[in-house]
Length: 327
Image (tube, rainbow, N blue to C red; front, side, top):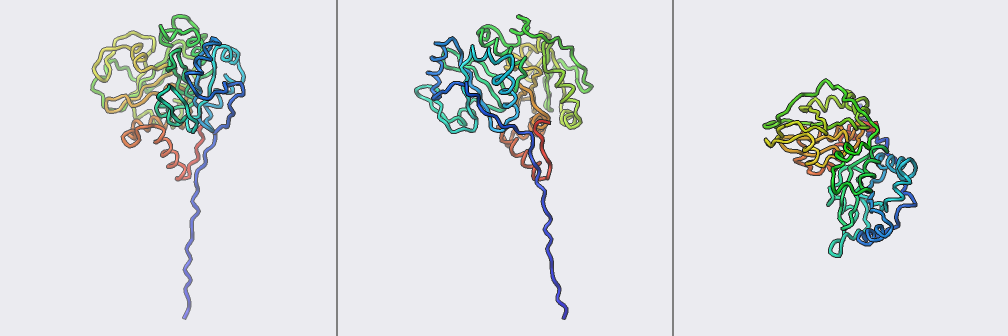
């Protein structure tokens, strides 16, 4: 009797790879802190400086770029050293940070409390030991210098960053708004329940041309943006608009209400609610993932965008799709 041999063939499953991550080292000149923030503020005041918390993440390309262009070299380096006491905080770290006599948290706990979504997040600590101003994500050296001047002069006590730049003419940019075919002209948003993306630009925007030419004109980004009612406002405008709650407001007031201090800044809405904002430079993978997070209502299952980002990333890798996070 002939014998039959059965063979099982195991098909090799290809797992995608992540590229674009960047290692970085914290500059040696950063303040050697015991993370007693109250004491750090007092020491900084004695030197006429402001405490700057640099919240970073390992392998973060945005963190690496910010460090290389501002804290290791570049035109801003001397100004930062003169005016700021810089303390590094790893948002996944386990060091203890004492905020007050009654509150001590681990680095990763503090990042959750501060609702850090993008790195590097930079938080400036006022004379009272409390956050006085923050930026969320990467800034080009020119855009970051606006922030540094704004905080060092304590203009944040009187102006929004947007008003400060407009009033003092600190920007060397003279940006002319670029046309984008999918933009809609809508002055009343009341009753909209579909996904809505509102882009805020202004004449002083130093990053808007790159945003148009290198990001939102990409085919993959256009696919995600097509799911939205897409609107653009001049962040300096006082034109009357009606927001999703039926409130009379203006682009300038919306920027202030939502604490948008980067251009182009973006507010993302769904089901008539503001879900999140994009307040810093993002490459296409993270930009698309935020858009998908809001349009597909993944915020219902993942209230923190960072949690959804991990899930989406793993889904793509399991499908054998490579991810270049700086593409």
